[in-house]
Length: 115
Length: 117
Figure 1 (tube, rainbow over the protein chains, first blue to last red):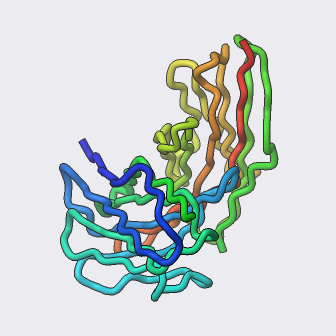
Figure 2: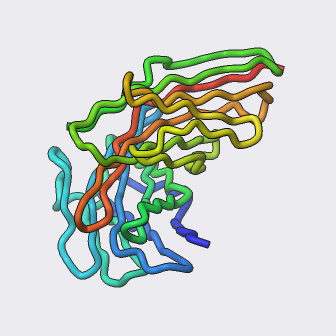
């Protein structure tokens, strides 16, 4: 149980285009989802927290107009990297929480390469 | 503020050796949760353990064991008789309690373990 499906696993896009990453909870309702970013050989850094039906909360230094997060339902959150640049190339991974028992399930991650 | 320190950046051991990965944390909360995750080269995060701040009992799961010491704010992870498949990056993480029931994880910088056959 508690599976989070993240797609795509890898994406290569041209500079200036937008990329959407989906994170879907398959067998539970995710009240909260977290989006992390990981540069090569570095730790995971929280980008934003999204709660179903409300605006995402972004961490300091993360551009909300560049990294659009939508959590329209209890099973789906999306991260859209708008006008991507090569410096946005990174590993993006989502995590879903199902509430007070502090269960966290991670998606398999998306490796984004902007050329 | 929450902080997790994994001082060991990289460790190499020969297969069948035991290895301990260190984790030291900082938090002002009295209630918090500690985690260990494994990240193999494929990138996904594999959950290993969650421990709440009120449970200082050490835990053993097969070749894995964890030593939680509140007095030193440490939550160390030991792999006994290491195997090549244990090669990965291991992250220690901390989460504090919140009324909403969900808070993000603060990750350490990770320890890259290489087990040499």
